[in-house]
Length: 324
Image: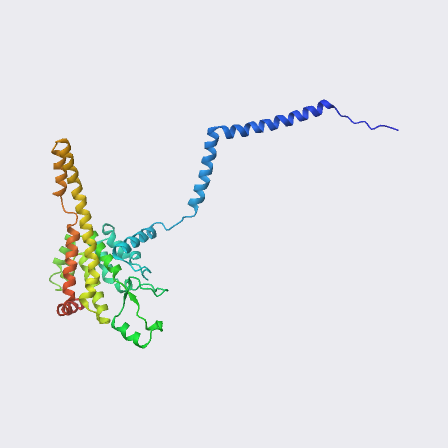
């Protein structure tokens, strides 16, 4: 009976085990060096940071560009002019006219005038429907119609008047008073003087500033709205202009504070050091040009135009002149 012979050398198995142990030890050494080395840790953190930043920038989290700027304008105007909580159907901040008024240096004055004349401002009055039926800051379209319809039926939604608000028009007027000069440009005035022999109505409109033309068009929208719903013109015009005047008053206080701070700081510095130079520098800020002069002139002109438009006798004559 033959016996099977196996070629088994103990030295070969010992060498194999030694090679495996050496490979494991070298791998462990590399892993420990990578974890223990500060540079390796910094490289790993940088890689993770790049991966996270690339994944976050690939999907923008919110609006950007023009839309983001419009949302910022809406939030600011809602705070200063008390927008209704449910918002407007047509936000004025998304319109081309709002951008023209906000950045007058980017658009020709003739283009702004044409846009004002072609704009339909009544679309900026309508407030979104409140699903909960709450109050909000919006105003009713008619007062008399509300009292008559509530006596007959209050369940039919078609008979309920739409909610209206002048807040957007007030914000647009305030922006125009802030950004645009109180008088027409010399080029526009020269053009009106050249055309003075051809028409008696055109020169007066050409000599008006951007803010005055905008105010006249908005006031005409308000008077047409108030006449159509049997509302008092003076009350509606005051509701339009009061927020503009309050905003202008707030900006005057802020501008006065900015002018007084250097004077107070210079006075305090002069008392502490005995040097009159800081006081003189601070006083120079008080004698500078009033930064609110143009805006105050614009708002004062709006007030005068509103008073004339609110008068029923003169308003009828003004409407006839504009229709011509």
